[in-house]
Length: 96
Figure 1 (cartoon, rainbow, N blue to C red):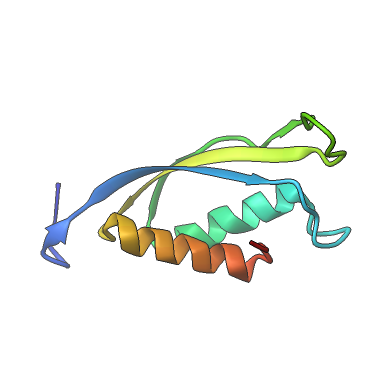
Figure 2 (figure 1 turned 60 degrees about the vertical axis):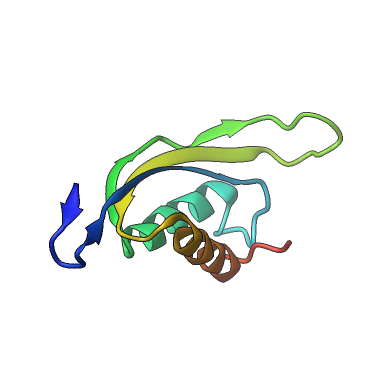
């Protein structure tokens, strides 16, 4: 599918989203997933978003996980998409 505005190809991506670290009482893992979806949607076309599913941890962790996924379209090639997503992670408080 061609993007006539940019003269380049539109790529389809499936993105997995997850968090188990609340940043505050109001910024729970599920809320962080919702914030990520909104931020990502500001940069590309969102085709579909799954519900956020809460799951119990495996192993020694005591925090529940929030997980979701989304389908998007973007003119960004994979390396540029990765850089954008990592900047969004940083903005949302991800520590590596």
